[in-house]
Structure formats: C-alpha cells, structure tokens
Length: 300
Image 1 (cartoon, rainbow, N blue to C red):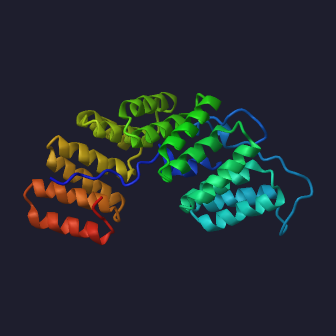
Image 2 (cartoon, helix red, strand yellow):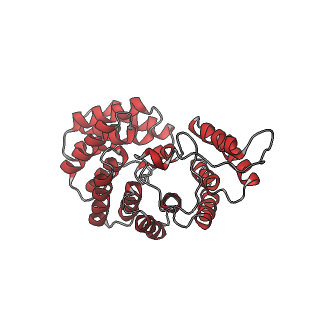
Image 3 (tube, rainbow, N blue to C red):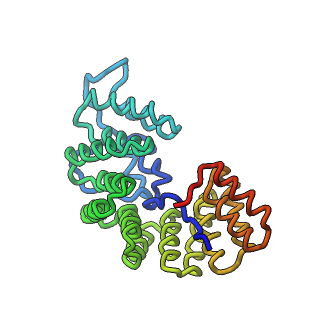
C-alpha cells in the first residue's frame, strides 16, 4: 500500500502564520533588551520605535518606512515590504528591527540564504534577541539544516525560557531528525507556554503519527482544528490518522474539509484518493489522484 502523505513542509509551529512575528503596531527597535516575549504577549510587538531626529527620505522617516513595511507584509505584498525595510536600513544601518523584518519577508519569498544573512545581522546588532535566533532557526529548518536549526532554537530558549515558538521550532527540528520522543517533549513545553497555538498541536500530531500513535495524533489534530478551523493541514493530517484507524469514511470527510479550505492542496487530493480506494470507489479515487498530479503532486 502506498503511504499517506503528511503536510509537505512541517512548519516549526507558526511558520505558516509567520505574520504574527511582524509587529502589529510598529516594529520593535532592538536596543540590547533581554529576549523577546512569546507572540501572545503584545508587549513584544507594540513597542513604539524611537525616532532619530532629522532622518528623512522621500519625506518619510525610518519609523514610517518600518510601518509601511509592516503594512505591506500584512497585505502579503512581500517584494514591496522588502523594499521598505531596505529603505530603513539605508537610513539607519543599525536598526535591528529592519533586518528582522527583512529576514522574515525573505523567508516568505523563499530566499533563505539572504534571510539567514539578515537574521545574522540582527543578532550582531542585538545578541539578546530570542526572536532573531528563532527566525534564524526557522530559516535553517527550511534549508534542511536540522542540526544547526536545533542548536539555534536552543540558543533562543536559553535567552528566553518563556518563548513558546522557540520550543515549537525545537520540536520541529527534532521531528525532522527522527528524534520523536524528544520532539514531543519540546512540543509539550511549547504548549505549556502557549496553549492556544494551533500549529504546535498540528505538528505534535505529526510526531505522534510518526510514532504510529494514531489515536493520540487524531486528538492533537482535532485540538488544532478547534483552535484554528481554517488550518487546512490539520484536516489533512486528521484524515491520515483516521485512515490508519481504518475509519475511511471519516478520513474522506477530513480530506474534503482540507480541499474546501485550500483547493490547490495536492496532498489532500492524493490522500482523498487513497481513502476512496479503501471505500472501493475506484473511479472517484482515480479522479482525485489525477487532480493531485495536475496540482503538482509527485511521489516522494
């Protein structure tokens, strides 16, 4: 039997919602403070940027460029956001928050090497920024440098032991290294610090799935869905757990929910086809898997 497919990139906790790491009002200008707090604490993201007198370009201060970069990022205009952060850097080469925004935006553009350089520069300017280390760790994760990512997430945790996303990132790196029990411990530590993060529950469920603990995986994915009913990956992964519990009709419903949320989810179509095969609905199974291939699905 062909294997069901998990989400094509298991995110370190909230990587799919990385916009949470951009500041909701204005980006914090790092100035040697102790590590950033978890994203559930607004104080990490709403510190007013201190202006440097007399800095203008195109009649904008660097504060305004920071705000513009933030707004463009939130609107998913990533190339324009990047240009805004570059304007800040031209005006103030020591503005760590501009490099932070640049790094996060470059991750969205999948320019990982450049993102890594931006996070390294952030760390040079603010060695105590747990958020910068977390961004660097996430970048290394996406570059498949899992051992390096693990070390960087652990550095973020040493700086700020309350930082839930750093534990979640550590869990993702450990899962990728097939150190599943350690990954579960890291996810549990993340959940203790932020019990409302749907992505952490989803990734915890993936690790339980890897351990063939399908009933527990199902519970974790259902909790993720409770916290974020729009999280398509959680429905796909819920379907996988149900499939292995031989609850094929329920699995099919879960895959359909994933497809409703993301009509271009090739994995969900592929897995739907697997469930339909088990239900002996051969024609529909073939159609679903053909749709998966049209969307770019390839055997791993």
